[in-house]
Image 1 (tube, rainbow, N blue to C red):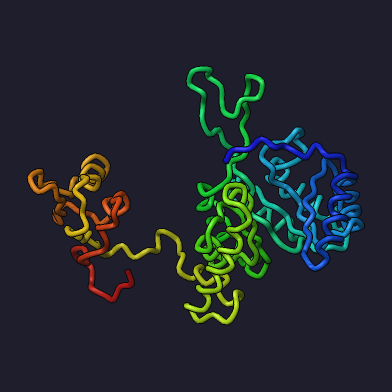
Image 2: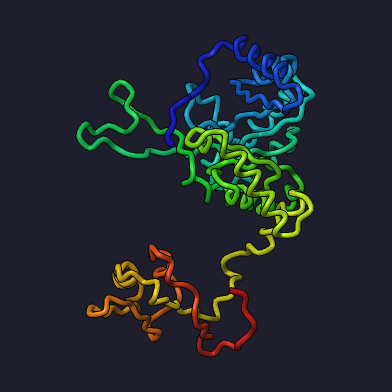
Length: 338
C-alpha cells in the first residue's frame, strides 16, 4: 500500500475521548497511544493527556514519512538529538512505558535507537513506512494517488517492506548496547510464518496494520494458531524461548564460507518445460543451463555453473533444488550445512 494519511484531522479531545471509551469497554486490554508533537512542550503535554485518558503505554511517532511540518515525523526520526530530547519530554509528562517508533528512511538506525534509550524510551518500535513513489499515471504524467492533479512522496507499506524491517531488527538486536532492549516488530506481517521470522530475529512483540486492512482481523487468529503449532513442533515451552535465535546464524558477508559450489538438481518429472530457468540463466546468469528443444527439458552444464541457483528461484513449480556439492580448486573438503 501507498498512503498519504499525514496526521489525524480529529480534534485532540475527540481522540482522548476515544481512548477513554476504549479503556472503559476493554479494561483488560493493553491500550497504546500513538502521539506526535512539534516541540518539547507538545510532546510533554500529549504524554500527560493520554495517560490521564487511560492509555497503558505510549508510542512516540518519530517516523511518519509524510507530514504537514518538517518538525514532525521521519525528519525527527533521522536526528538522534531531537529523538533524545523528545523522549525526555515525554518522560517528564508521563510515567507510562514508552516506545520510540523508528523510521526506515535512514542508513543506520542504531544511533537513533541509542538516543531514544538515553532519553528514557523503554523500547523500540520498527519500522514505519518507506518513503516512495509507487507509480506514475502515464497519460496524465502524475504520480499516484492523485490529489487534485498532484501527488507526493509518501509512505509504502505491506509485504514488500518486510525484508527491510527484518534487516533493521537484526541490526538493532545485535548492537551491544541494544541486545536486551525490547523491540516491537512492524512491517509486512501477514502470516504466522512472517510473525515467526520477526520473533526469531529479536522482536518481542508484533504490530500489524496493512495485513489487517487487506484481510481483516481474522489473520491475527491464524497467526496465533500457527505460532502455537510451530512452538509445539519446535519443542519451545514459550514464545520467549525463540526470540532472537536466528541472529547467531547471520554473519558479515565477508565471513561466509565460499569454498564450494552447490549445483542445481532438476526433477524432470515435475518440470513443466516452461524454459524459465534457461532464459534466466542465459540472459541474466552464466549461460550454464542448457535447453533441449525437442524434449523441452533443461540440463545444467557444471563446467559453467557457479551455483547461484537463480534457476531455482525462478522455477514456477519448484522442481529445482540443491544438488551435488563441489569444493573449489585448492579448497579442503569439510562438513557443510546446506
